Length: 376
Ligand SMILES: *Cc1c(COP(=O)(O)O)cnc(C)c1O
Image 1: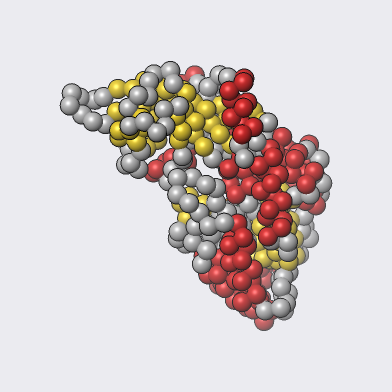
Image 2: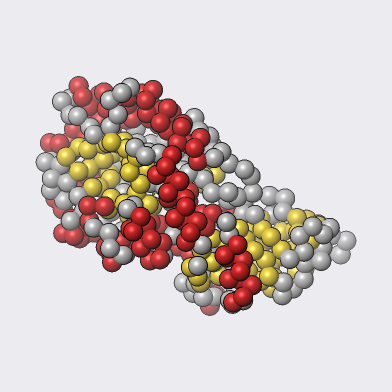
Protein backbone atom coordinates (compact mmCIF):
# COMPACT_ATOMS: atom_id res chain seq x y z
CA UNK A 1 0.00 0.00 0.00
CA UNK A 2 2.90 2.36 0.59
CA UNK A 3 4.81 1.69 -2.64
CA UNK A 4 4.06 5.27 -3.63
CA UNK A 5 5.88 6.53 -0.56
CA UNK A 6 8.92 4.32 -1.17
CA UNK A 7 9.08 5.54 -4.76
CA UNK A 8 8.90 9.16 -3.62
CA UNK A 9 11.65 8.66 -1.04
CA UNK A 10 13.91 6.88 -3.51
CA UNK A 11 13.35 9.34 -6.37
CA UNK A 12 13.26 12.63 -4.51
CA UNK A 13 15.61 11.85 -1.60
CA UNK A 14 14.09 14.65 0.51
CA UNK A 15 16.13 16.07 3.39
CA UNK A 16 15.51 14.23 6.64
CA UNK A 17 13.68 14.07 8.91
CA UNK A 18 10.40 14.12 7.02
CA UNK A 19 7.09 12.31 6.92
CA UNK A 20 5.58 11.23 3.63
CA UNK A 21 1.84 10.62 3.67
CA UNK A 22 0.05 8.53 1.05
CA UNK A 23 -3.35 10.19 0.62
CA UNK A 24 -4.71 7.06 -1.09
CA UNK A 25 -4.31 5.20 2.20
CA UNK A 26 -6.29 7.88 4.04
CA UNK A 27 -9.02 7.63 1.39
CA UNK A 28 -9.09 3.86 1.61
CA UNK A 29 -9.23 3.90 5.42
CA UNK A 30 -12.12 6.36 5.30
CA UNK A 31 -14.06 4.33 2.75
CA UNK A 32 -13.42 1.11 4.67
CA UNK A 33 -14.77 2.68 7.82
CA UNK A 34 -17.90 3.87 5.98
CA UNK A 35 -18.27 0.37 4.57
CA UNK A 36 -18.02 -1.48 7.88
CA UNK A 37 -19.83 1.08 10.00
CA UNK A 38 -22.44 2.59 7.67
CA UNK A 39 -24.71 3.73 10.50
CA UNK A 40 -22.09 5.94 12.13
CA UNK A 41 -21.24 9.43 10.94
CA UNK A 42 -17.48 9.93 10.75
CA UNK A 43 -15.97 12.98 12.49
CA UNK A 44 -12.25 13.00 11.73
CA UNK A 45 -10.26 13.99 14.85
CA UNK A 46 -8.25 16.75 13.21
CA UNK A 47 -5.47 16.79 15.80
CA UNK A 48 -4.16 13.42 14.58
CA UNK A 49 -2.89 15.12 11.44
CA UNK A 50 -4.11 18.65 10.70
CA UNK A 51 -2.57 18.88 7.23
CA UNK A 52 -4.85 20.85 4.84
CA UNK A 53 -4.21 18.11 2.24
CA UNK A 54 -5.83 15.52 4.52
CA UNK A 55 -8.67 17.74 5.68
CA UNK A 56 -9.52 18.72 2.08
CA UNK A 57 -9.48 15.11 0.97
CA UNK A 58 -11.87 14.18 3.78
CA UNK A 59 -14.12 17.17 3.03
CA UNK A 60 -14.46 15.82 -0.49
CA UNK A 61 -15.27 12.34 0.77
CA UNK A 62 -18.10 13.67 2.94
CA UNK A 63 -16.46 13.43 6.34
CA UNK A 64 -17.33 15.56 9.34
CA UNK A 65 -14.73 16.95 11.74
CA UNK A 66 -13.98 16.80 15.44
CA UNK A 67 -12.02 19.91 16.40
CA UNK A 68 -10.41 21.14 19.59
CA UNK A 69 -9.58 24.79 18.94
CA UNK A 70 -10.31 27.90 16.92
CA UNK A 71 -7.46 27.28 14.45
CA UNK A 72 -8.76 23.77 13.80
CA UNK A 73 -12.20 25.24 13.06
CA UNK A 74 -10.66 27.74 10.65
CA UNK A 75 -8.69 24.95 9.01
CA UNK A 76 -11.84 22.92 8.35
CA UNK A 77 -13.82 25.92 7.11
CA UNK A 78 -10.97 26.95 4.81
CA UNK A 79 -10.85 23.41 3.45
CA UNK A 80 -14.51 23.70 2.49
CA UNK A 81 -16.30 22.02 5.37
CA UNK A 82 -19.53 23.75 6.34
CA UNK A 83 -20.07 24.55 10.02
CA UNK A 84 -22.77 21.90 10.37
CA UNK A 85 -20.06 19.28 9.76
CA UNK A 86 -17.97 20.45 12.70
CA UNK A 87 -18.15 19.23 16.29
CA UNK A 88 -16.27 21.23 18.92
CA UNK A 89 -15.27 18.13 20.88
CA UNK A 90 -12.76 19.55 23.34
CA UNK A 91 -14.23 19.70 26.85
CA UNK A 92 -11.81 22.52 27.74
CA UNK A 93 -12.66 25.57 25.64
CA UNK A 94 -12.19 29.29 26.04
CA UNK A 95 -15.46 31.16 26.04
CA UNK A 96 -14.16 33.40 23.28
CA UNK A 97 -13.47 30.32 21.14
CA UNK A 98 -16.95 28.97 21.81
CA UNK A 99 -18.35 32.34 20.71
CA UNK A 100 -16.19 32.24 17.58
CA UNK A 101 -17.42 28.74 16.72
CA UNK A 102 -21.03 29.70 17.33
CA UNK A 103 -20.67 32.81 15.21
CA UNK A 104 -19.34 30.64 12.37
CA UNK A 105 -22.37 28.36 12.69
CA UNK A 106 -21.03 25.46 14.76
CA UNK A 107 -23.88 24.03 16.84
CA UNK A 108 -22.44 20.86 18.36
CA UNK A 109 -20.29 21.05 21.49
CA UNK A 110 -18.83 18.68 24.09
CA UNK A 111 -18.63 19.31 27.82
CA UNK A 112 -17.96 17.38 31.01
CA UNK A 113 -18.37 19.97 33.76
CA UNK A 114 -20.75 22.58 35.07
CA UNK A 115 -18.37 25.48 34.46
CA UNK A 116 -18.08 24.51 30.80
CA UNK A 117 -21.86 24.30 30.57
CA UNK A 118 -22.08 27.86 31.89
CA UNK A 119 -19.76 29.04 29.14
CA UNK A 120 -21.77 27.16 26.51
CA UNK A 121 -25.10 28.53 27.74
CA UNK A 122 -23.78 32.07 27.42
CA UNK A 123 -21.70 31.84 24.25
CA UNK A 124 -23.64 29.18 22.30
CA UNK A 125 -27.31 29.57 23.27
CA UNK A 126 -29.57 26.76 22.12
CA UNK A 127 -26.69 24.65 20.78
CA UNK A 128 -26.64 20.87 20.87
CA UNK A 129 -24.40 19.62 23.64
CA UNK A 130 -23.15 16.18 24.53
CA UNK A 131 -21.59 15.09 27.79
CA UNK A 132 -18.39 13.08 27.85
CA UNK A 133 -18.25 10.28 30.37
CA UNK A 134 -15.15 9.00 32.11
CA UNK A 135 -13.53 5.78 30.92
CA UNK A 136 -10.69 3.79 32.43
CA UNK A 137 -8.98 3.32 29.05
CA UNK A 138 -7.79 -0.15 30.02
CA UNK A 139 -6.16 -1.92 27.09
CA UNK A 140 -5.21 1.32 25.32
CA UNK A 141 -1.61 2.01 24.39
CA UNK A 142 -2.13 5.75 24.56
CA UNK A 143 -4.71 6.24 27.34
CA UNK A 144 -6.74 9.43 27.53
CA UNK A 145 -8.08 8.68 30.99
CA UNK A 146 -8.81 10.99 33.94
CA UNK A 147 -8.37 14.26 32.12
CA UNK A 148 -11.67 13.98 30.24
CA UNK A 149 -15.17 12.99 31.17
CA UNK A 150 -17.20 12.74 34.35
CA UNK A 151 -18.97 9.92 36.16
CA UNK A 152 -22.44 9.08 34.90
CA UNK A 153 -24.37 10.35 37.93
CA UNK A 154 -22.77 13.73 37.36
CA UNK A 155 -23.33 13.48 33.61
CA UNK A 156 -27.03 12.93 34.27
CA UNK A 157 -27.29 16.06 36.38
CA UNK A 158 -25.27 18.08 33.88
CA UNK A 159 -27.45 17.06 30.95
CA UNK A 160 -30.55 18.07 32.93
CA UNK A 161 -28.82 21.35 33.76
CA UNK A 162 -28.06 21.82 30.07
CA UNK A 163 -31.77 21.75 29.30
CA UNK A 164 -32.48 24.15 32.15
CA UNK A 165 -29.91 26.58 30.70
CA UNK A 166 -31.60 26.57 27.30
CA UNK A 167 -29.18 24.20 25.57
CA UNK A 168 -30.26 21.03 23.76
CA UNK A 169 -29.06 17.95 25.65
CA UNK A 170 -28.21 15.91 22.59
CA UNK A 171 -26.11 12.91 23.57
CA UNK A 172 -23.24 11.21 25.29
CA UNK A 173 -19.62 10.70 24.25
CA UNK A 174 -16.70 8.67 25.45
CA UNK A 175 -13.21 7.76 24.32
CA UNK A 176 -12.06 4.27 25.23
CA UNK A 177 -8.39 5.26 24.87
CA UNK A 178 -6.27 5.68 21.78
CA UNK A 179 -4.76 2.61 20.06
CA UNK A 180 -7.32 0.50 21.91
CA UNK A 181 -6.90 -3.20 21.20
CA UNK A 182 -9.42 -4.56 23.71
CA UNK A 183 -12.67 -4.73 21.77
CA UNK A 184 -14.68 -5.35 24.96
CA UNK A 185 -14.08 -1.74 26.04
CA UNK A 186 -16.83 -0.48 23.71
CA UNK A 187 -19.31 -2.79 25.41
CA UNK A 188 -18.42 -1.30 28.80
CA UNK A 189 -18.71 2.24 27.46
CA UNK A 190 -21.95 1.72 25.53
CA UNK A 191 -23.43 -0.04 28.59
CA UNK A 192 -22.75 3.04 30.74
CA UNK A 193 -24.09 5.27 27.99
CA UNK A 194 -27.35 3.34 27.78
CA UNK A 195 -27.81 3.64 31.55
CA UNK A 196 -27.44 7.37 31.16
CA UNK A 197 -30.02 7.45 28.36
CA UNK A 198 -32.46 5.66 30.68
CA UNK A 199 -31.77 7.99 33.61
CA UNK A 200 -32.42 11.01 31.41
CA UNK A 201 -35.56 9.50 29.98
CA UNK A 202 -36.85 9.41 33.53
CA UNK A 203 -36.06 13.12 33.77
CA UNK A 204 -38.08 13.76 30.61
CA UNK A 205 -35.10 14.13 28.29
CA UNK A 206 -34.78 12.04 25.15
CA UNK A 207 -31.11 11.93 24.16
CA UNK A 208 -30.51 11.31 20.47
CA UNK A 209 -26.83 10.58 19.89
CA UNK A 210 -24.01 8.30 21.01
CA UNK A 211 -20.49 9.43 20.21
CA UNK A 212 -18.29 6.32 20.10
CA UNK A 213 -15.08 8.38 20.13
CA UNK A 214 -11.73 7.32 18.73
CA UNK A 215 -9.54 4.39 19.62
CA UNK A 216 -9.25 2.67 16.25
CA UNK A 217 -5.67 1.46 15.91
CA UNK A 218 -2.83 1.80 13.47
CA UNK A 219 -0.37 -1.04 12.81
CA UNK A 220 2.69 -0.57 14.99
CA UNK A 221 4.99 -3.32 16.23
CA UNK A 222 2.24 -5.67 17.40
CA UNK A 223 -0.67 -6.85 15.32
CA UNK A 224 -4.14 -5.43 15.89
CA UNK A 225 -7.65 -6.74 15.16
CA UNK A 226 -9.04 -5.84 11.74
CA UNK A 227 -11.45 -2.96 11.23
CA UNK A 228 -14.47 -5.22 10.65
CA UNK A 229 -13.98 -6.69 14.12
CA UNK A 230 -14.02 -3.22 15.66
CA UNK A 231 -17.17 -2.37 13.74
CA UNK A 232 -18.75 -5.64 14.88
CA UNK A 233 -17.84 -4.96 18.49
CA UNK A 234 -19.34 -1.48 18.34
CA UNK A 235 -22.55 -2.53 16.61
CA UNK A 236 -22.93 -5.53 18.88
CA UNK A 237 -22.59 -3.28 21.92
CA UNK A 238 -25.11 -0.81 20.50
CA UNK A 239 -27.78 -3.40 19.73
CA UNK A 240 -27.19 -5.22 23.01
CA UNK A 241 -27.73 -2.09 25.09
CA UNK A 242 -30.17 -0.13 22.93
CA UNK A 243 -32.12 -2.89 21.17
CA UNK A 244 -33.74 -1.93 17.88
CA UNK A 245 -34.22 1.68 18.83
CA UNK A 246 -30.74 2.84 17.92
CA UNK A 247 -29.79 6.49 18.50
CA UNK A 248 -27.70 8.39 15.98
CA UNK A 249 -24.06 7.35 16.08
CA UNK A 250 -20.87 9.33 15.67
CA UNK A 251 -17.33 8.01 15.49
CA UNK A 252 -14.22 10.17 15.79
CA UNK A 253 -11.24 8.34 14.33
CA UNK A 254 -7.86 10.03 14.25
CA UNK A 255 -5.09 7.47 14.38
CA UNK A 256 -7.19 4.83 12.60
CA UNK A 257 -7.64 7.02 9.51
CA UNK A 258 -4.17 8.47 9.07
CA UNK A 259 -1.64 6.48 11.12
CA UNK A 260 -0.92 3.83 8.50
CA UNK A 261 -0.69 6.43 5.76
CA UNK A 262 2.67 7.90 6.76
CA UNK A 263 6.33 6.92 6.76
CA UNK A 264 8.98 8.99 8.49
CA UNK A 265 12.44 9.00 6.97
CA UNK A 266 15.28 9.81 9.33
CA UNK A 267 19.06 9.65 9.28
CA UNK A 268 21.47 8.05 11.75
CA UNK A 269 23.52 10.89 13.26
CA UNK A 270 25.66 8.92 15.68
CA UNK A 271 26.23 5.38 16.88
CA UNK A 272 28.16 4.99 20.13
CA UNK A 273 28.74 2.93 23.24
CA UNK A 274 28.96 4.24 26.78
CA UNK A 275 31.72 1.92 27.98
CA UNK A 276 34.15 -0.77 26.76
CA UNK A 277 32.72 -4.25 26.62
CA UNK A 278 29.14 -3.08 26.42
CA UNK A 279 26.85 -4.71 23.90
CA UNK A 280 24.20 -2.08 23.66
CA UNK A 281 24.74 0.59 21.03
CA UNK A 282 23.21 4.00 21.32
CA UNK A 283 21.73 4.97 17.98
CA UNK A 284 20.95 8.67 17.65
CA UNK A 285 18.53 9.66 14.88
CA UNK A 286 17.87 13.11 13.47
CA UNK A 287 14.31 12.88 14.82
CA UNK A 288 13.23 12.34 18.41
CA UNK A 289 10.58 13.07 20.99
CA UNK A 290 10.55 16.79 20.21
CA UNK A 291 10.70 16.35 16.44
CA UNK A 292 7.42 14.45 16.17
CA UNK A 293 7.85 11.19 18.05
CA UNK A 294 6.21 12.38 21.29
CA UNK A 295 4.14 9.22 21.49
CA UNK A 296 7.28 7.28 22.41
CA UNK A 297 6.76 8.85 25.84
CA UNK A 298 6.97 5.99 28.37
CA UNK A 299 7.68 3.86 25.27
CA UNK A 300 3.90 3.76 24.72
CA UNK A 301 3.70 3.63 20.95
CA UNK A 302 6.26 1.22 19.51
CA UNK A 303 6.88 2.05 15.88
CA UNK A 304 8.15 -0.47 13.36
CA UNK A 305 11.52 0.61 12.04
CA UNK A 306 13.18 -0.46 8.79
CA UNK A 307 16.77 -0.04 7.71
CA UNK A 308 18.59 -0.78 4.48
CA UNK A 309 20.38 -3.65 6.24
CA UNK A 310 17.33 -5.62 7.38
CA UNK A 311 17.90 -9.37 7.37
CA UNK A 312 21.49 -9.02 8.56
CA UNK A 313 22.66 -9.88 12.05
CA UNK A 314 21.30 -7.52 14.71
CA UNK A 315 22.22 -6.37 18.19
CA UNK A 316 20.42 -4.48 20.96
CA UNK A 317 20.11 -0.70 20.69
CA UNK A 318 18.90 2.25 22.66
CA UNK A 319 17.27 4.68 20.25
CA UNK A 320 17.46 8.40 20.93
CA UNK A 321 16.79 11.73 19.29
CA UNK A 322 19.27 14.49 18.47
CA UNK A 323 18.36 17.18 21.03
CA UNK A 324 20.28 18.13 24.16
CA UNK A 325 17.51 16.93 26.46
CA UNK A 326 17.94 13.66 28.31
CA UNK A 327 14.20 13.02 27.97
CA UNK A 328 14.83 12.66 24.25
CA UNK A 329 15.25 8.89 24.35
CA UNK A 330 12.82 6.94 22.20
CA UNK A 331 13.30 3.32 23.28
CA UNK A 332 15.45 1.92 26.03
CA UNK A 333 13.35 -0.89 27.50
CA UNK A 334 11.27 -2.00 24.54
CA UNK A 335 13.93 -4.39 23.25
CA UNK A 336 14.71 -2.82 19.89
CA UNK A 337 17.41 -4.52 17.81
CA UNK A 338 19.14 -3.07 14.78
CA UNK A 339 21.61 -4.48 12.25
CA UNK A 340 25.24 -4.47 13.39
CA UNK A 341 26.18 -3.05 10.00
CA UNK A 342 24.06 0.07 10.53
CA UNK A 343 26.29 3.10 10.03
CA UNK A 344 26.29 6.82 10.64
CA UNK A 345 24.62 8.55 7.70
CA UNK A 346 22.30 5.63 6.91
CA UNK A 347 18.68 6.42 6.34
CA UNK A 348 16.11 4.64 8.51
CA UNK A 349 12.36 4.44 7.97
CA UNK A 350 9.89 4.67 10.82
CA UNK A 351 6.59 3.20 9.68
CA UNK A 352 3.00 4.11 10.58
CA UNK A 353 3.84 7.70 11.39
CA UNK A 354 0.88 9.44 9.73
CA UNK A 355 -0.81 10.23 13.06
CA UNK A 356 0.35 12.38 15.96
CA UNK A 357 3.78 13.19 14.53
CA UNK A 358 3.80 16.49 12.63
CA UNK A 359 1.18 17.82 15.05
CA UNK A 360 3.43 16.99 18.02
CA UNK A 361 6.63 18.37 16.57
CA UNK A 362 8.23 21.32 18.38
CA UNK A 363 8.69 24.44 16.30
CA UNK A 364 12.31 25.23 17.04
CA UNK A 365 13.67 23.28 20.00
CA UNK A 366 17.47 23.35 19.90
CA UNK A 367 17.15 25.01 16.51
CA UNK A 368 15.71 21.94 14.83
CA UNK A 369 13.05 22.69 12.24
CA UNK A 370 9.53 21.32 12.65
CA UNK A 371 8.97 17.94 11.03
CA UNK A 372 8.44 18.43 7.32
CA UNK A 373 5.61 16.60 5.58
CA UNK A 374 5.03 15.59 1.95
CA UNK A 375 1.80 14.26 0.48
CA UNK A 376 1.76 11.82 -2.40
C1 LIG B 1 -7.94 12.61 20.03
C2 LIG B 1 -9.40 12.41 19.99
C3 LIG B 1 -9.96 11.48 19.12
C4 LIG B 1 -9.13 10.58 18.22
O1 LIG B 1 -8.64 9.50 18.90
P1 LIG B 1 -7.88 8.32 18.10
O2 LIG B 1 -7.62 7.31 19.15
O3 LIG B 1 -6.67 8.90 17.50
O4 LIG B 1 -8.82 7.82 17.08
C5 LIG B 1 -11.33 11.36 19.09
N1 LIG B 1 -12.12 12.11 19.87
C6 LIG B 1 -11.61 13.03 20.73
C7 LIG B 1 -12.55 13.86 21.54
C8 LIG B 1 -10.25 13.21 20.81
O5 LIG B 1 -9.76 14.11 21.66
